[in-house]
Image 1 (spheres, rainbow, N blue to C red):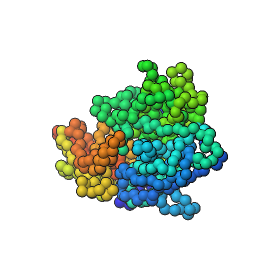
Image 2: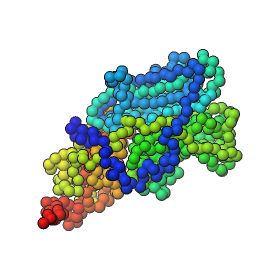
Image 3: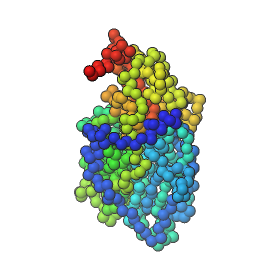
Image 4: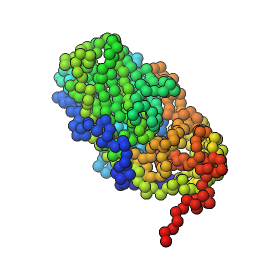
Length: 545
């Protein structure tokens, strides 16, 4: 296993430019291309302001971990005051030679999401948050989140280990804090959080953006949701303003493939754009990886809203070249009570809904993958394997047809056209705890799906799409106002291939552990789709004279 991982993960994509030169979704063609890569949201400054860094953990990471956790968090300021900036990160627990902590590569371990829940006035509410894009929340000068030491903090997180190796990490966060005892605190206006979420509020607010869905290669959720997707729409997708307020700051969160989050307001049947948090991709292949920064609102953004106005959020994904399973669309908005000086009414004044990024390219996103020198075969050339009714997944290996296997076990298992092949994940059974389990998927990828693993490869980009969901089991913990499913798992560990697949060879990968690759073969009448020694010999080109 270690040598297999080394081959798939160690090679950065030296040929990425040539490989993806023909891509129709290059970074230059995306909506966020116009966003400056160097102009950032400025930091507010106050006399007596403190910059505080906390390391939550150490958190022991199990092999292949992809669980949702929530624990009490006592790492916070000791005195009352205002939080004016919040910068999230994930680092290894091991101390480096300089006495600090290195950041893991995103294709090895990453912070799928972290949410700082605050318990106040008998209410538990998500306040600050982070995804692997690591957006920095920056309040404009004169505004801050009012903090009290009596607030209870809960650290809700989902750390994704893409490898079968255990590890240990810290969730690192740095805040700018103005103690209430400082004279500057008297000039800070309190802001309150508003969690806008297309599929929340719940522990795992996700939906699928499928390849080809939407219009002109863009899919907006929930606007263009299919009837089967309506169940994924969350109540936090809209909010009715109870009294006069001013929106002060916002930024979005989305996953690879995401293009932008929109925030709109509706009054008397008219709808106005308030802000668009755009994805600025540094990824050469375009909107396919975590190598991205989201825009946040500019320091002078002030939006005046009145009682009865309705705020909505949507998120748009690029569906031209791949499907994006378990996607998110969240905007954390901070607002002040009343109409603040300089605030504009969007129904009578123009609003600048463009923003600035909060950071540039991050070095943990340097391994893009896609190098052809992975040492894996082209499954289309392999001879037929056995005709099992079930393929077990165990030890991060597909029992039949795993592209890293040699000999007969590496050959694609065969299923007759019109029938299904069953997969069973023995790495995640109902008797295992979520921490002991490793969830796996069977997700279609474009043939031959045999290049090195990185943040931009492999993708769910096959012409014929299928996905098993995360095979395994997780808890249901009913929390009032937060939904009940506290896991990304499908709460089953079996899946069957679609009966509608036409004869041919199908390649797939595990979305949770992308170094895992496999193939199966559908064979029709008269052996259509089959690869035997005889048929393979016919395909071989004749030797040149």
